[in-house]
Length: 539
Image (cartoon, rainbow, N blue to C red; front, side, top):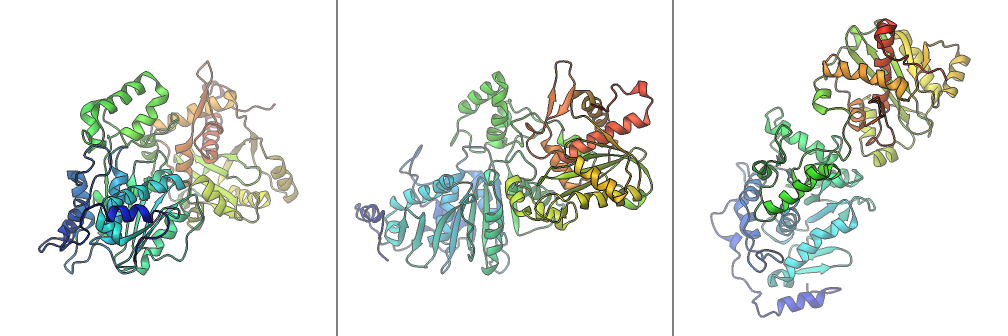
């Protein structure tokens, strides 16, 4: 297949550049090489097209070679074991170039297969074009590739004349791609993806191939529910031996949470290519700026130290939250005394009721959201609502808007199962519910709870004391954990705090309900003098 279409003249120029196209034998075709060694030989036969070392052949760094050797290791029959590979490193470690080289390896190199389908996927159309641009530059600098491959720049497609394989660049914010039979997928900067649909479509499309491979390369996400975080957490469980999964290989290069991110001795932990692709001086400049200006610190910690850090200061330390992850069996709580917080949404958002049992320290959350539109909510909030609903962590109510009649019936059932002494509620969106409860003849111990500093500050103090003393037992409920990870406080001049839904990273409904439950429990369990502030605002 000759070069044709946009870019054909560039390819012909590359072929006619005076270099010979015919090659008797490629380096990766030498006898005695392992599968991983063939991949490495292919990559190191290709040119560096820009920056330091431009014009020379690629020389993989030790961390890159080790990762490739692990990903392309084979079993006794010569089949590659790994189906999913992960590499999480700080910014500037040559991730995009490595992704482009590996994609070419599967398109026209030793890992190519007949009519293979290779994809590079990124968060946006512009970012998706970065790997394509690297591939095109390498092709144009390699005459045998320029002669063999058909590059269609406008469509971000590359075709191989010999195998019939095709490469295509995809964006997670674009149209869904179905009907694929992916042989190779590289997901670039997965932490930045706003939707998970493309990831799920591509991952499930690999079942049609004998030895498919999906690679995710990028920095960490600050959010534990992000796709990248899921893979990083899974890798840590595999590497620790908690889970056995020979089809998965993942490595994380990051400055540990208990290490000093401003100590230059720790920077290579997240930057294995320091001194090659990124200089220590450059990182030092960013570190100095982060120390001088606090608003720059989160970006430095996330991008240069590859730490799971938010741009906003977290209200809850994840380690302290996880330390309270013990679960209390539901049957041991039935009939037990408890207090509750209720946070209702007005239409389509998440609604939450959280019970707190003082004698056991148990936390029992209930969540509701409308069933219609749950796919859209999953896309907007970037968390697995549908999975949570299937697992019973969220109850999907009928219709497009929150069904308060359904919630009223559930509240009545919950109140009959437990000794609910008081339910603190946010007055927002409560009127319709109280009308329904009155109409159904349901009486609940509802108490209006203000959302300002007067009520929420002592409630936060009560909640925080239980959290710090590890006296809460929330059972690692995933929706409540997500809410807790999003929580941000507002603070007044006197140091009083309240949750801020506008500034918080995402939904905090369950955590707000838990704080109210702890607050009204403290009011009900202790003498009035011991609890500063009434906790209840009646105006």
